[in-house]
Amino acid sequence: MKYWYVSIFILATCGFFACSSNEYYYLQSDFTLVNDAIQEETVSGWVVPGSDSYDAIKIQVCDSLSFFYSWMNPKGFFSIININSGQELGTYCPKGNGPQETTGMDPIFEMQNGQDGLRAEIIDIHRDRIFVWNITKSLKTEKTIYDTIRPFNRLSRYASPYNWCFRLNDSQYFTCTSSIPFEDINQVVTPKYAITSSSDNKLIRNYQIYTDSIITVPSNRKWILPNFVSMECCLKPDKSKVAMGMSYYPQVNILDLESGRLKCYRLKSAPSISILNRIWYYASVCCDNQYIYGLYNVQDLLQPRNENSVSVIHVFDWDGHIIRKLALDQLFDQICLDNNMIYAFDRRGKIIRYDINL
Image 1: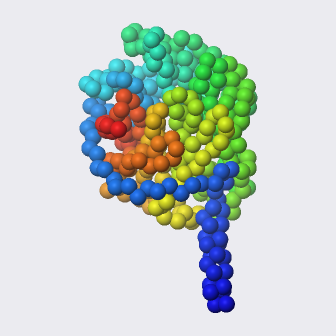
Image 2 (image 1 turned 90 degrees about the horizontal axis):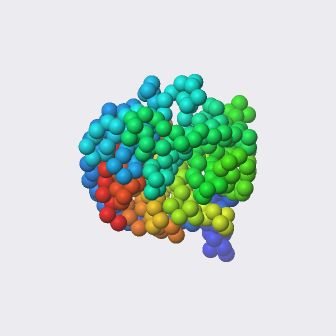
Image 3 (image 1 turned 180 degrees about the vertical axis):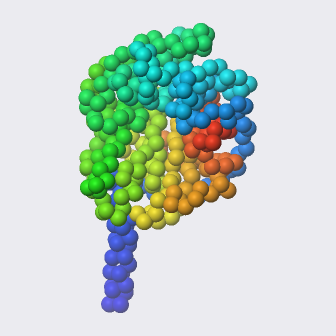
């Protein structure tokens, strides 16, 4: 009889902690615990010359080019340097109210590098347009060349801007909206993940990622609005899946675009998650057709930034297994992947290049 009572107590206790840890989970799919007991490998990189000269908030890298996205540069939204020499190649996408200018432009989500040159589609967030920037021609002429500027009514379907917008084919995008907080009533509208028409933003397919479209939280937990539902995303190059690194959970999710199935993988060794804490886990993700690279920081945002901390890149395969952990030299905010190189960026303006050699 004594053992029966002990068993009941253990079950009840386990049930309580499981419920507590998942109280603010809100995803449709349960998670699988991933064995992450893998020895970290310390990797050393080298500074991209000239990369500390720009007050940027995001970067992109393609071949020998690094793009610095900044709202502070009065000349334009993007500055470009040669990552091998550090040579400045100009500032592009001018700011203003002219027909080929804008007062607000999204970062580059992806680039198309084809036989006819390098291009990027960039959303004008204030005038509902898309600029198709011909980067190759712009570099040759040393001025911004747009192949076309076309209408794109992003607000026709959602009241919030896109956090991510990836081209799937000639006629479709995969999009993710920002979350919208209503702090006075302790609610947040969850992000919307969808496939939309690239011509008129018409909804083609919606993905039910979250349990509810509007989430309510207690007033003493307002800090989680809207951050706790945010995720960093990248599109697999073959366009079949999207990888998501959760900002406030030690978890990576993989969405199959054809089946609509979401698989979630949480680190087994991660400490218990508490809504009382504000821990920043995955700061950035990038991917190729073999692997997902998650920039793992584990920073307590309620405390001063620990400059002695270092970021660790978790390398997942597309089945959710961690196969490597790469400890970097310092703490970073973003990573990009190009030609088997990881480019790590911190907001102080420095890019470090790492040969991942997988």
